[in-house]
Image (cartoon, rainbow, N blue to C red; front, side, top):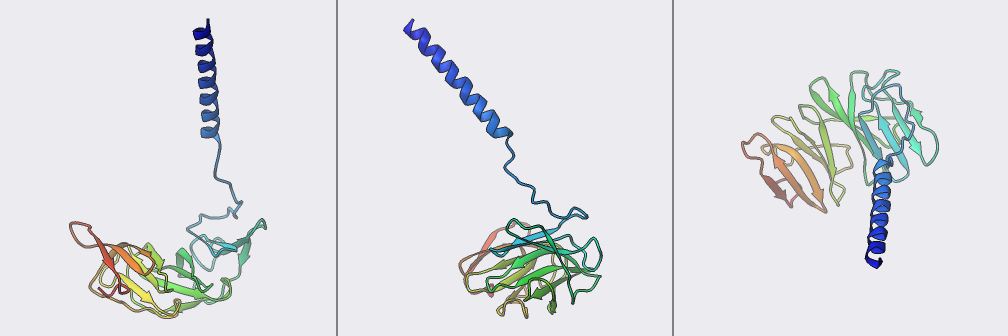
Length: 205
C-alpha cells in the first residue's frame, strides 16, 4: 500500500512538472514594442536611454529613423544631410554618445555620423566597397567598419568617434570582426581556410 501511494505521488508530481514545462514552452518571451509598421526594419541600436530603428532607405516616407525612450511611443526623426540614394542597414551608438549609421550608395559603403540624436548627419569619407557592413568599437573608443563581402580595403578604423576613417592594414581582408577590450579577433576573407586572427595593435598587424 505504501509503495502504491509513493508511485501515485511520483506520477502526480511528474504530471505537474510536465504541465508546467509545457506552459513555460508555450509562453512568449519576446514583447512587441509596437514599432511603426509601414516598412521593414533593417537596423536597431540602443544607447542606454533611447532605442533607434531604421527601415533602410533614407529620404522617403517609408524610409525613416525612429526613436523610442522608455514606455513612450516611437517618434519619427526628421533627418537632414542624407541623400535619398543612401540606404542604411546598421546603426551604432558610440561610447561617446553619438550615432553612426552605415549602409550603401550603390555599390559603395558609406558611413554617416550624428551628434544630435539623428536629426542632422555628416558623411564620413573613406574607401570601402561591398554590402552588409558591420561595426565594432574597442575599449579605447576606436571604431571599426568592415564589409563581409568587401574587396581591396575591407575594413577601416576611426580614432575620432567616426569623424574620419583610414585603413590600418590595406592588405588584410576581414569577413567577421569582434573586439574584447582592445584586442581584435577577425576571420580573414579571400582564403580557402577561414582561420581566426588576433590583433593587439588596432588592426595594424
